[in-house]
Length: 396
Image 1 (tube, rainbow, N blue to C red):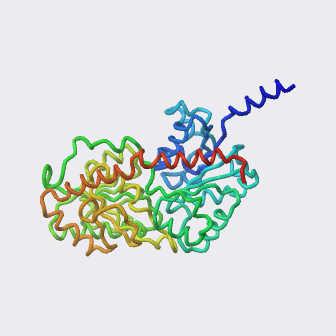
Image 2 (cartoon, rainbow, N blue to C red):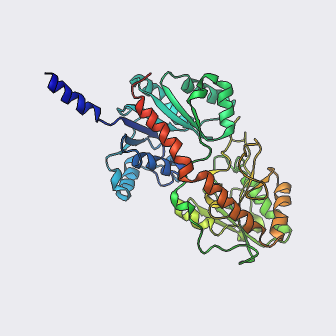
Image 3 (cartoon, rainbow, N blue to C red):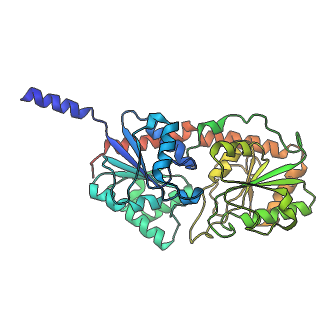
């Protein structure tokens, strides 16, 4: 009997712990930073059985609703190694697993009751957005519920602003926080951009981009209105420029008047197409405003779309109202502006006038972004969090 017990015990020891990723967008091709992050979890931890589950609730933000099964089938067809590891997520039936992981506050809070019923540990990444608004009551209520859960194992935070808020509000949770600034960017984004041309060196027309999703009528939270007015002001000043808009935007959202011939609307694009567009841009302008989408709402610094273009050596020209910048040098590898047309024009005009200035900042920016967002910086601490989560399966 003891011999048989040893065999059973031995077999139990080699069973890999199971982590279920619960999400509302992956594996949709517009999953953004989630795509690279979750694929790494699926591929880079052979000692852990990782599966991803999608409810599709965020599909309407990236081009319209689609059947979750169809999106998963397309993904698996392109990534057959993940067959049987990406599943639909039913809102009334959480998958059986030893531990759970999610990104964004809303996703985590949505499944918290179900996770707690399993009495299994969980971890989550508190990115900006996704229901997280600093100081807003509904957000704080959800955050209180999540951070006070006895099954919370680890929290990954991506912004110093978020870190400071969590430590102040939940001092007892500080030991569970892993601060990893930024996000996981696709590996293909880090190659030196080929066939790149630069304003004032290889071309005479300036290309300025705006890349963002649309959450309000005129995109005031993202500064789309400021982008249009900046184009108007630069045109009045005699700047010969093309304006590229990526996302769910068109010429009817803000009156274009005589500017329409200068604008190119690309609509939603995938990551590879965004890189192609990024290689043509001299500047990506992101005059976003915190607190507009909702009380306490804010974007990451810099935004993921800015990072995508910046890695193609487009100059990131963005606001930093909340003083979140800790790693970039204004005028050297980034250009910081106030959310006003006058300040944007004030900062850009001398750079447009000086031959090679934008190219220099864009190249510096790519070097800095590569260091901060590279896989060797982003992935090891995240993988460590999930490995630790797997080791604590079933622990309270």
